[in-house]
Image (cartoon, rainbow, N blue to C red; front, side):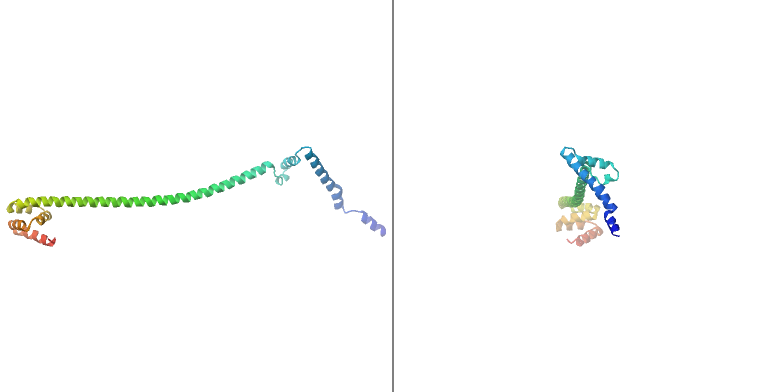
Length: 199
């Protein structure tokens, strides 16, 4: 039995034997070779990355300088695109604001143009009324110097509104003489309109 215990102690676990006999010496040899080659000026890590990048499974774990550079450039481009997208959104907001301002100004211009047109129309109407009043006064002065019978005949032929406007500009004596010379029906109508108009 004592012999059996000695045999068990001498037998080593096969996993430990593999680790100490094969794996650790290989790792130490690779480390020493890497240090010696690096001191000699050979880029061992670059060579390993280059060779590891060609191996299908290992290539997913190895990142070369080119891949790092591409990754940095990709991130830089993405950041730039993000900045540009934000700038585009800001420009869209600015454009919308400017369009709203332009629309508001166009509406204001239309209002001002309408107001100007209305003022011009009113001014034109006022000028027309002034011309008509001046014309009526001029004609009324002509009727003052005319024979009442002749003036009555002319006024009877005119439209009643025109005749009434002329009659308003005449003095009471002249108006009375002309109404006296008119036929009774026309004189009555003109007198009624004269009263209704407030003079």
